Length: 277
Ligand SMILES: NC(=O)c1ccc[n+]([C@@H]2O[C@H](COP(=O)([O-])OP(=O)(O)OC[C@H]3O[C@@H](n4cnc5c(N)ncnc54)[C@H](OP(=O)(O)O)[C@@H]3O)[C@@H](O)[C@H]2O)c1
Image 1 (spheres, rainbow, N blue to C red):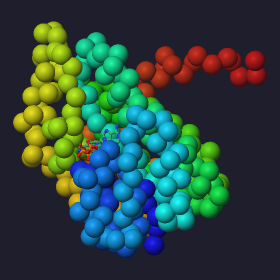
Image 2: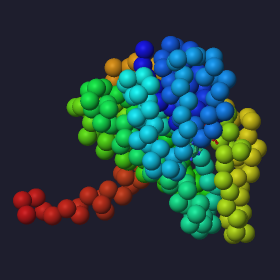
Image 3: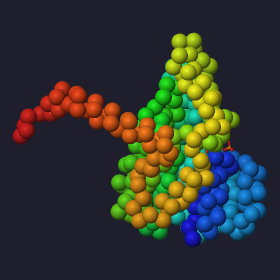
């Protein structure tokens, strides 16, 4: 039985991961902005599900969430850094307020929570940090400059932290979903004021998202089961791509990056000092 701290357990992936964790007999701390949203789930699993009030934009909440988890269950085995939201805005359209709030929620807040969890996991000599990344961090779309940028920044931070802590018994996994049927492109998506020049790019992508709402191919319950399986793996992957859209898009990006590297390496390679100098 593991102790799992899950942010954003009210809806979508977080809710599905919380339900799957509890159904498999684990102890779960449900870190949410409004505990009323998980009251039914908590009542269904007395003693196993523990709600805490948590907001990624409030710096003090990170250490408090970790402290309350350990006070409640005596350990912290898995941190699921799930909470986050998208901002549909061309880079030029985003306001300072939108930029700051999105970075706080998708990068700084989860970063702080990982930093707060590490002392406990180092003490245990074990732990798994699972972060919901996004395909936008790898193969981005017009309109997700801020959102994809924030997710990519957290991926790079976790890449370093995974190498810093592997010998200390701590594992990292970045979950990389394509479109999944959650509240992500509905109530959770923030929008900038559109400039006419971006109608054909950002506006078009926004239209694609609107049409997809409620019909996204990804099933959060199946994703949650796959993520829970990773918690039992001896060597879980650092990147775990979910769904057909995510897998084909990621593969296409890898191939195009390799082709671009090869096409330009005659120019880029000879930029070192001559050997021995
Ligand atoms: N669904 C997709 O297609 C997709 C694709 C790629 C990546 N993702 C990532 O998956 C993760 C989960 O999103 P989802 O798809 O499950 O969408 P969702 O149903 O909208 O869930 C988002 C969750 O994040 C919480 N949240 C937002 N801002 C927060 C804050 N400041 N502090 C604490 N909690 C906050 C929300 O809480 P409230 O209930 O209080 O609003 C909600 O629980 C996100 O990180 C998202 O970027 C989703």
